[in-house]
Image (cartoon, rainbow, N blue to C red; front, side):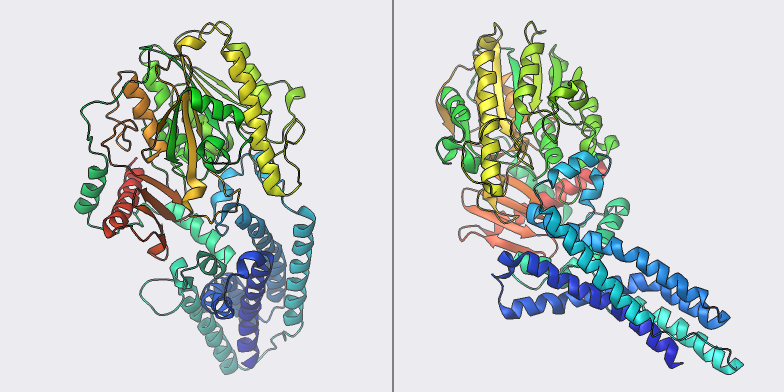
Length: 615
């Protein structure tokens, strides 16, 4: 009888203790952030996180508890051997999740969930995105954590006593106890007796987002994320009544001006739409960044129109692409681009231009299979797609694919005598991790932030060479160049995941088709606002881009909405509020931010996600 109870409790406590060690490892690895917490806050990460640790320990204990029940019934040692095999197979999987989270948290600012699993069909890109990680240290930590876990389990395992034949009444008692222990697992799995089962908000206790993140159990978070994304069709962001939420959002997009200024001297210009990887406003000289990092982009800003207060809608490339080309809001923990049947229902700039005679093409030096981007572009009816596999292998001198100057050279080569008017989208990649570049470094230093700065400079250098040659082409005088980032970046400064400075990006209009020069537009806007702004300049309908406003409408409501992992930011002239959808409370709120702005942010989160579910 005692054997049954002791064996079951020991197994459950083994996993619970293992996850406590994992939290200590996370805090040690993120020591810079952990140093900002008080001793009380550090203690609370363990205290509040214990419920989630116990919950996942209980999930992992279900099968062993069933095997313990069978061992008690049939007196066969083989059931305990199966428990050992089950545990020793599962242990390295748990260790892998925990170790992967250590570095991914540094890069992404949120605990590991199912997001990386969305990129398993493109392992090369996954490897490239973490190429700057300290691989040796992570491998060493993997081995040490796995060894510690295996040793602890074998210590517990060696103290198990095989059941021996007993009298019938004793056997019945053992079976009842085994069933009781199995049934009791429901309690830690749910996190207690409360009506609502355990979720991430139960481990949140602080205004400091890192303290809350530290309490999360990574394997539990991955499992929960997979279940929530694959099966949930309910909106988790129901903050307001449906009519109230819709009215608040509609008011944000009500046109305010009767007309907007025309920027073009050509009625139907060619359009070069250049999306720049990770091009944060923080490094652009024209937007207050350091001098000398982006001399070519700065020059184009002086030659054309600079929008100085534009924010990315999200923090991933595939999310930024949908915002830029479809004017559609970004989802927090997933992306509409992953579901082709949904993207089929999205309007796209390429298909709108194709209707009026534009030849459309898309150039990228990486793999379009990444994040299901290719299906989205095909739904957008692009006439021509070019990706990594279309370049000769000798040009593969980047871990992602081909470097930006080679990409731009190919665009020039294909546009010697192009069909006009053309809409050509070019997506750079060299300023993505691991920031390897084919030219000598401009700035001294081997730290990751300096490497990013050098890759930023290289992309600007490649852009400058491309523009210089493009200006020699006969089509230049009839061409509008659009330059914008897919998303921002934590560098420089390692912005917190929700920080508005991480999401601010450059937007520049240039080219011979412009009728104005050296103009700065200061209205606050989003990536989602770009498509209707361009279509209006071309005299084309744009009402079906419902989640957008015209950036040139001086009377339009100035705002930008962006999302990060299970949270959102709302930027207005009064300031910024960032909101945690798990804790259901603001993370940061500027002093002048009104309650109305907070409610508008909630309404936008609620209605945009509801629209995503309906697609």
